[in-house]
Image (tube, rainbow over all chains, first blue to last red; front, side, top):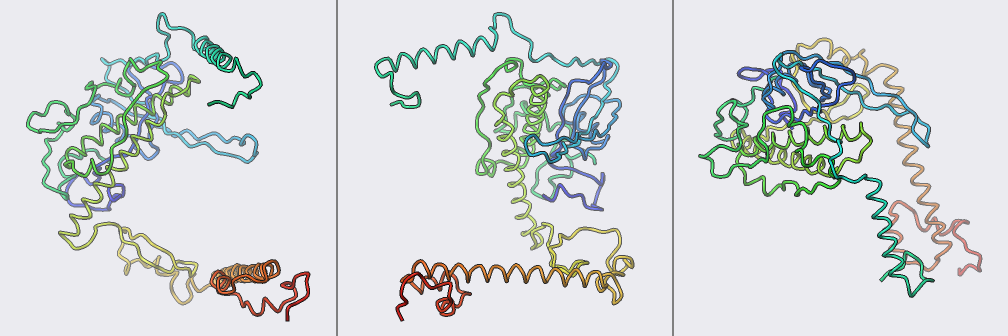
Amino acid sequence: MSTRWYPIYQKGNPQLRVFLPNFWMKLVRPEGRQQPSKVTFHCSIEMTKHDVKNYIEKIYNVPVVDVKTRIAMGKFRKDIGKGYIVKDDDVKFAYVTLPKTMKFDFPNIFEKKKGDGDDDMKSLDEAKKSFKNYIERNKDRSDVPSWFSI
Amino acid sequence: MNFTLFRSVLRNVTSVTYRSNKVFSLCGLPQVPRTIHTTCKQYDLMEFFDEKKNWNESNIRVGRSWKLDELRIKSNGDLHKLWYVLLKERNMLYTMEHECNENVKLFPNPERIDKVQESMDNIETVIRERNIAYYKLETGETGERSVDEVVNLLGLNEKYQKQEYYLPKFMNTRWVRSYFEHGYINSLAVKKFYRLYKEKLYNIERKARNRDFSHVQHLLKRFPDMDMEKLKAEYPNVDIEKAKRSKKARGHYMPKY
């Protein structure tokens, strides 16, 4: 698409304008300990610091003080089974500093709710139930294979 | 790259007026009859995460993606707003997927990402259609990047997408040097490459010819009474009379002639 392709010069300022930006950003859990006003992102590899700042300020309406970026090289690993070497994609990290007054705690998404049974127990119960159904259904025809059903 | 997109972006397409910086206040526009309703309007970094009730769920039901025909009847303003809704949704899904992978959990309903992506692709298609229509009306051209057939440095034909350069072609002495009489394009290396390339192409063609001929011979051996016209139509480059006369085409029976 033509908006993905920056002309060298266009009338009016600012020179670089985006109509429909297709950049993506992920908010990720920080690797180590981090100040409460800092947030770690993964973003599209072509994004600059200015892009990150504008993206968060304009689209998410969150003020940004400072942005630092780095590109982490993807790992080289052997493909399981085939043995050839595969390189994972590079990732761009963006470390965004919010104003002093703001804090961001990464939420704990997989916290267990109270009264929620264990997942394994749930699936085990389900399996038991389906096995019981299967036995019930095939009571009168014990020699019929399990894949046969009407 | 700058994101001050709101003033001059749609100037080329139709007369859509934006109040700058207010584009994202999606829910409260009383003068627009059809607004896009979003579920949450919290300008916060928590927009990168799903709603709290969807955390820890194993099955999240969502609707389908936006279709082209639905988007075609929307105004440019609506499409512009919808794009950002989808962009945020996609970021949210990416974030949740990443967090799930980190915690070795299954990401519920991963097809949501595909649906959002499809909607975004459809929006781009519609915007592009409108852009082309506008350019055709105003300038008689599509406004797309034009593609030229050029001869590249290896002497091969190539499809070249035109692009802008700081230097005009006639002033670019460095670029033109390789196309001179003693330039790179006439060098021994390129000639050798071209010769070997031609040989490769010829060998591919020759092998295909021989393969077809041999195949026809074997067909004649197995099915001597087959429809010759059909065979001729299937393999137009094969001389069928010659194939019939050959030793390979003879079956294990007394010849009829």
